[in-house]
Length: 126
Image (tube, rainbow, N blue to C red; front, side):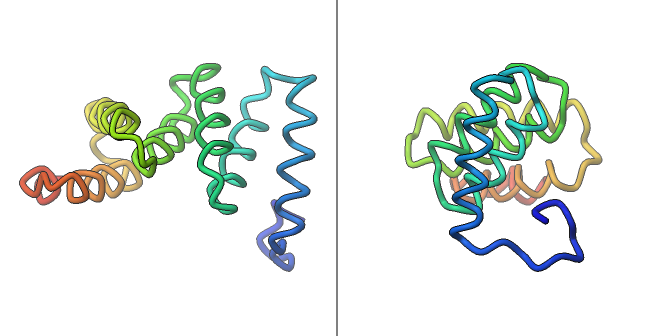
């Protein structure tokens, strides 16, 4: 149901159970990039930064050329309250922009992050 756009959306309790199930499954299948991505997305929806960042970090480590893994990890890092995470997320976004300057998701997140960091020239240029 979580992957079916026509289905009723999951409520918060169902999302939390999904996250728990994914974490349990990934303990036995740690190389499952799609599973880590799903856990990262679930963590973001639930507002659980630690889960989201950790899951996206695993996905990115397993598949650094996967744009969903890289962008998810960059987004989780840039939303962190830790300035070092923000710096690393910004650096990853710069790499993603240089790799593909036509991806609207990358450009949007890059511009938003630059604006949040008060780098207005970069935000406008993106």
